[in-house]
Length: 515
Image 1 (cartoon, rainbow, N blue to C red):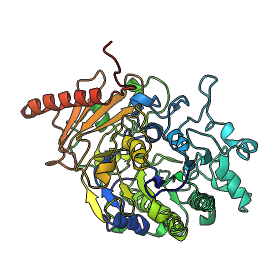
Image 2 (cartoon, rainbow, N blue to C red):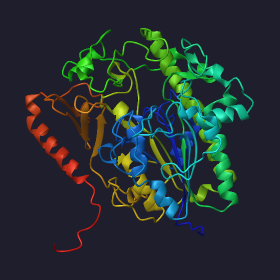
Image 3 (cartoon, rainbow, N blue to C red):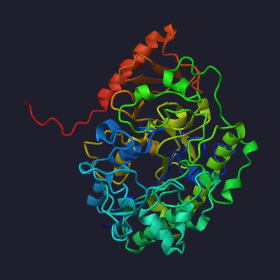
Image 4 (cartoon, rainbow, N blue to C red):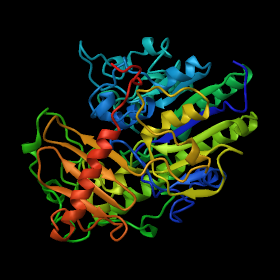
């Protein structure tokens, strides 16, 4: 298909579990010069949200344009079924090349006869297979994958092959048993040399694909999917000491803030909380544990200095990733592709590093974990250097990409086409956000409705909930759910939540006849 300036290329860059307020352009305590460059040259959306604060459901929403309750990959440990329609399918039919480099996480680490998984043991370490397999995979005609965060034992697939090709035959020394033999008590400093880090691999392979597309004059939809700053908190030298822990602002619990919250909030502050009453599947419930302890490798009780070191390492991971995002942006410039390539940067969900006394993620729908950084750059189409308050959801990414490329949006997609907002032709196309979290079939099943001022969270089969006034209580310290002075507001928001649920139902075809 011939190129047209009206049909841009798409470069989608994502991080993993990045707090929305970790961009140097808005936070002077962290350095991200290349993400800042996107902020300067594009539009920053300060009210962007995930559809679910965990990886698989949120990532599946990105490529389907549907909510987890619609696409079916409702929790970690589930699989996005291959019978869905993916955004990459639409791009391929329109003549685009489609690729994913880095983290997929559309499938679980275990495989069954009914639900097979390429990302499961032992398949992810069947190197004879990965030497030959590069797709197709979920609408991408080319993939180069890995499954591990930092030193996890899940190392394998194309990343492990690359390390061997690059001259690191002892790569297992830098990963945990049973795959590798790294000491699990090692924290904060990852002895893996930077030249073999997955950031290096992702940038190198992304840039090679960009060169290939340029050489062959091909349109592309390319997802560059980084793994950081998802914990474990490990980063190579010199990034491990880039930040002085004592110079950083460390969020913490505000005494009494969980007194009016549902019981699972306060239990996270206990040393040995009992969450067995919520267990149905027998698998781990993310976040439902004591947040007083380091959760990775050898667990230990967190001191204040440990908490500072966590933030310093987390920031170091982001700054290192930023360096390699810069290498990709430079390659776009060098190849003359920047003018006709839309670049979008975001994360699959947010992260706690002390806010509300919490660490990592879980069923706590504070802004820290459901808001994400979000930047869109498209020279001459998206105004540069502007911040925008219009609400964005990760379910909007697929329909918006297709809209910019003049590709028909499938009726199955329930996200909003944001093209007119990104181009500043409309103020907004949505007035609310829906965020879902379901980790068990019945006991942990919640949904959150957010509008311009308020946020309300409901739990299946529970009378407790959350109601926050984000204007007067931006830190979300005062849950108004049981406050009698807000009963009318709660009734109104519950009704608006139901309307939002009704609105998001897909219409697979128009009505074409009287009967």
